[in-house]
Amino acid sequence: MCVSLKGCYEPWMLFRKPISKKTVAQNLRKWGAVALRMLEDSKPVPELILSARTPRQERSVAPHPCLKPQHIMRILVRSLLPLGEGIIFDPFLGAGSTVAAAKAIGYQSIGIEIDHEYYEIALSAIPKLAGLYPSFLGETVEMPSTSVRYEISDNKQMQWILAEERARYGK
Image 1 (cartoon, one colour):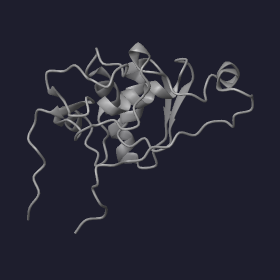
Image 2 (cartoon, one colour; image 1 turned 90 degrees about the horizontal axis):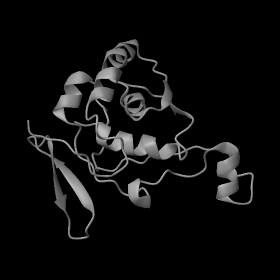
Image 3 (tube, one colour; image 1 turned 45 degrees about the vertical axis):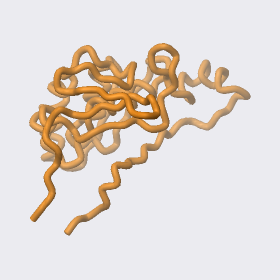
């Protein structure tokens, strides 16, 4: 029995103030938002970011059923504040992967969690998750780490594959 499909697709939503000026540039000057921060070398954040299962190292620090990998969270969190200023808000803190990514990058953040057990996990996990991969701040899609190897796919997009065993399914 399962409760959801595991289609390897998770949509994300970005909420922002209405565009009140004529151009994105004018809104950026007024609000400091309304655009996504580019990756290094002026590359846009790709529409599809290939990721893999959350590494064992991260799961051991923050035992939560929906823990998101720091690889993807740092890319997303960094891109949300185009000028590097503002506050990241996570209304579903869980074990704190979003807030940890913000802390690693040097952003301010606020997280809210209704479950006291997960809140306690987040208090301990956030500084530990933020301390992992100190050289990766989400400026690229590639994450340098000894636990990750890289492959170039046929369409020349970079993808990463964790160097740990695959998930096992069975009885």
